[in-house]
Length: 420
Image 1 (tube, rainbow, N blue to C red):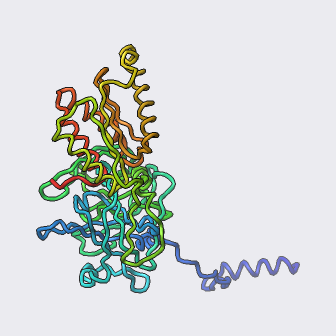
Image 2 (tube, helix red, strand yellow):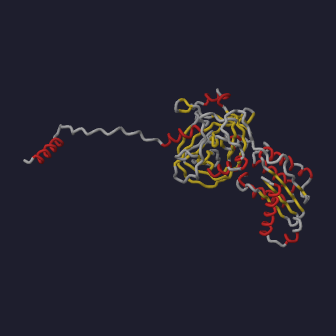
Image 3 (tube, one colour):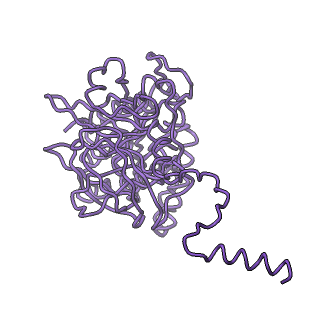
């Protein structure tokens, strides 16, 4: 028998013979444990997550969640319905024992004086249920969370972190999938006595949310913010909604927010609101004699409040007719007249160096124009809504009521409305 065939036959016999163990092969190197995407995202995002406490007075304490989105400006993002009309809040960030955050609420409340950071509500978008809180300081080691480049798509994995009241624990993680992204109108409870309405672009997911989660971060697999937990919709059934990234960007891109100085300090005495562009508010004029004396007296205080606290102008100018253009305007079409007043508003804005709202009212021909040179300073579509409210009052000859409504709407849009 040839040698080659002998060894082949012998090897086959060894492999096939009953009772004989197969030859030992070289052991594979140990495999690395698979990385859990959820755990990885959690570790990245939880350090920027916050627990927000809002004292409503009368022993009522509202709690929610938030996210540090700008460390330099010390800005925490949360829901409007978490803080309501209260102008201050106390914010906690997680304390770590090793790699895990301490989740016991009592631990933080017992150390409120040390761990609780005071903050001021500086910017509000009631329509989108969003606010920005400016902290007195940011603890060392707390990073801010980056905003994603774009909104998520249906089917995309998302992750949220919040502080649900019924859980008893803080920094609770919830995974989910995006069902759809769309515009929605909904209502939520501000407190036991007050229900508020919202209108914004939202993300619908299959992940559960609970009271206390509101205001917390919704992120993608890269740990980038794509939304804010809303979690308070009264009409939601087996779904959860989150305020979309686009609404967040609209809020943070407002001029008043961008004007805040960015710094890396953590001292508790740092407070530097933007310096107003002028010492006194711009003067309004009622040359068209539309308003009563008492109603007109309210314009100047409102303008001063907006300027000092938000660096925003509020100017009302009425006229019998634009100088030298009465007959010309009468012959114009509606579209031509709109264009004329737009150009007039732009010209007055340039002359006044106005940053805010300009309301122009003409008696002959009867025309109303509301101009906002920087729409990002206000909720989406604010100028149009303000104009509609004024027209509705003016048509009923309720000019004073319309003026008051314009003042109230502008103050409320900047978070300066009076408590009701």
